[in-house]
Figure (cartoon, chains in turn cyan, blue):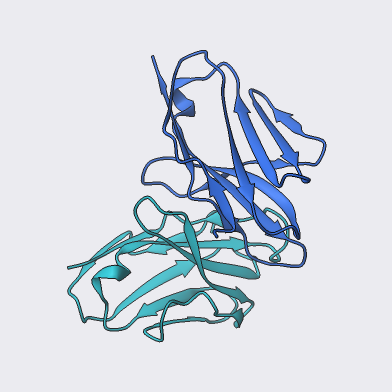
Length: 114
Length: 110
């Protein structure tokens, strides 16, 4: 597509439920990133994909968080047993090769855990 | 210590004014530097890269001081549409991820 597409744009979930966030990167972009942004905070790196592999998962805050990418394209970020501190905007970005400044962000998923 | 630190502001300036702000970075191996702009409840978008010799893009001027490890952004002749949060971003050589500051908020008033 023309840009990075994320869905849903908003998600309200009850504490303890699992949620799945989706990112559809720009076609042909091999690098895909997940960040999250809490209110008034900077962007926190979560995970990076190069193709389908994730060489760096170090940013995932706990084992409740996981992500996968299939076909070198769509990625899903799954949060199990959500907690209130998981409430944030989850941003996905893609870039042609993981180098340089060619990050394009999606508009994010605003997750609220109640 | 955070990798990238910024004065959160807010900087409230009248239209037509000049506003400038800095950020500092802690990793001396940082090689690439950028300013991103983020509007309220929107995603960040690249404003400009920052080069060692300093660079301009219209009303925006970016400077890099490697010795002191800080980056600056100056906005001349401020417009109402410049109101946003400006994110300072750094990247290390051979690193794939960008490190973001928490942002400096600028509000331009009529």
